[in-house]
Image (cartoon, rainbow, N blue to C red):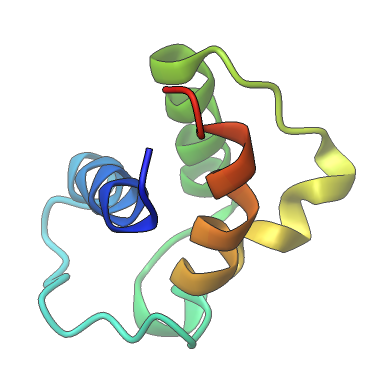
Length: 83
């Protein structure tokens, strides 16, 4: 899966978790929590949705790689290369 596709997948998950958020001006380099009203449960929902959709395991120690859109895409690109 290409990075652009992964970004869209993450946007779709965010739209599902936070339907009232405007994602059109999301800055890929700024932390999700600084741009959106996400709590720790919302973050876990993102991880669980990725697990459900693509059967990938994201260890808790890697959660820091999912802070911004750019870091999330960078982290997921090798994991989803065959998706």
